Length: 267
Image 1: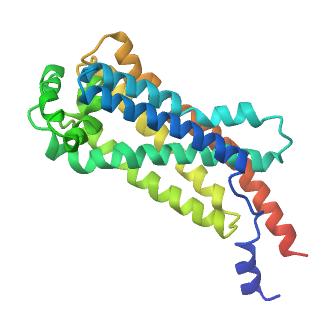
Image 2: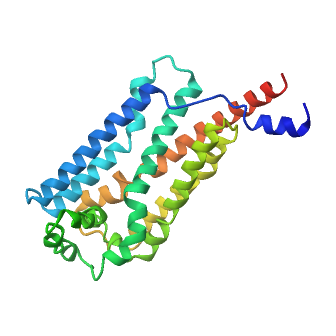
Image 3: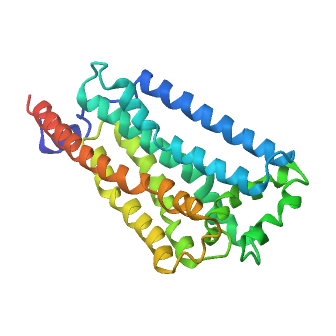
């Protein structure tokens, strides 16, 4: 085999891995439940059963729980007899899918439209005052989707520059997620290197996001202590703790891929 052929072959010799059917089912079921619960909140708000603050607050609690779904996969599948690397791959993929969905559902639309949609909103009362507009038409519920986090953190509606800059990384994360699945499809031994490279970004961004508000004296936190914890802890710890965990696992998976590919390439 020539050097060129060996190099090409090496980049496609990693073990074939795909999300297992069991993990896929757990992810789809929990995601369907979360989606149905969120849509229910939207309907209850639209018909006047829930006000804007309560419906938004509950939606944030729902998503903070759903982001932990990979832990449910671990708990339900840890004794299933699956090969360790395949099991870790399942956990990683479920987390990456959850992260990417939040990018698509809220962060990227918010980044694109927030500075046009939200004008002259400086207090929670200013945001709540848009309730009549949101209930005028189902089409106006986009305002509810983009504005829910504003109940906890006014930086999402008052054109805060730091918050806006940090959300730019959602495009990077989404691009890296798609590229990971491409590398996984072609069985590249470097697929997990992408995870290692990318794991530091959400950690740094989340630390800046949370502590910038702490150092500013919580000036953009309109709620009580529980709302502040929801904004800065319960919806954020996942982006610090989980990348640390998966960065460590990915390093072991990368070494396993490299060893496997080198062994196959020499046979």
